[in-house]
Image 1: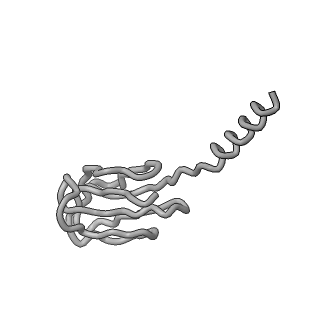
Image 2: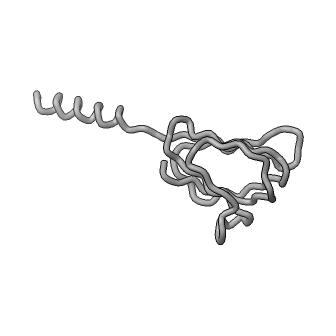
Length: 103
């Protein structure tokens, strides 16, 4: 019985120390209000539309996540930009996809 208690205690410590890296990306597809992608951890390609000249905002919520931005919805080819720190910028071109890594 004692070993079950020790195992359960160890399992609780491991589970409670597991962190999930949350992030938020605010973008604007040309409307009056920002849209948001908000997730936990890494994600593959997310198809979206962010209009050139509009501001975007990337918040990592105290994580090590990195964002990679693309000019196509398949997130392939040359990146339009990337950052591993919080970032706000007026887009110099239309964006159609993002990936999030290193969470």
